[in-house]
Amino acid sequence: MNEKNKIYEIATSLDTTSKIVIEKAKEIGIKLASPQSTVSHEELNKIIEHFKIKKQLSKNINSKEIEFRSLIVEIHRVNKGWHSFETSNRFLEQKDNYLQSYYRKKKNGLQKELESNFTDMIHILPEDETGFKSIVIKEEYRFDEYKDACHKI
Image (cartoon, rainbow, N blue to C red; front, side, top):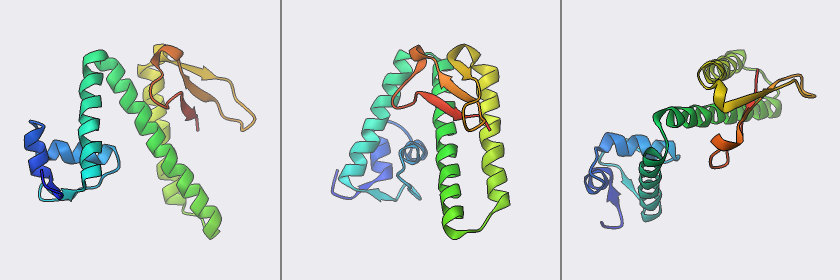
């Protein structure tokens, strides 16, 4: 492939669709608009590596673990958004109650799903000094940098 790698060319070489390549790229923080979009050589390598990891994961773990991992990653993604929101609100000295409510509801919903569907894979710890309980992933189910599922709110 040339220096400017088009998404549809990458999809063909990975034996998949452009839509899937765009979705997988988004998972790793690469935003693409269409199959005609191009990526750098570095971004191409990241996308290919992500496909290899996903393929290996699907071979090594069952569907419940894949669903569990996806949920943990989503909880952390929402939590990062929440912390960014909190920081910007402190910096700007203004409140956005709608956005605060959105993050809280989204995180609450994800954590309830985690508690109801994956109780055998997590521990719920008692309240800490912040007044919140924490959800921790059991040792045998930890992956990548994910060791917990954040504070319950």
